[in-house]
Length: 123
Image (cartoon, rainbow, N blue to C red; front, side, top):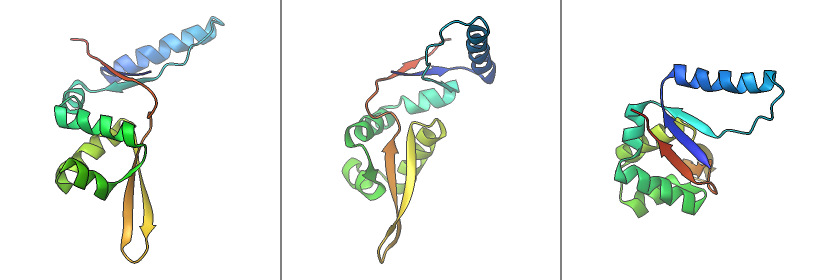
């Protein structure tokens, strides 16, 4: 499971310090799949069209940019914004490959295709 939590850089470092203490105390450190996210970005990602995109990508594995445009009926500017936001928090990877005779095409790949993504917000 991947946990996405809202917080600041201080929250991130507090979490890292807790892990460091566990290591110093020779305690077993359990892997943490936490992505720290600014609250404003979390609210942006939780919009219905972006959560639809996340589900779509998880179900497809890797998919071409042009296919996403067509199947989700998105404009290029809207899709670019969404992908940039998801990429910023390492939820997706954007690859480029040659497209014989047509330049380069983008491939979008989710980085957690088989894991549940849980959003946690603290106010």
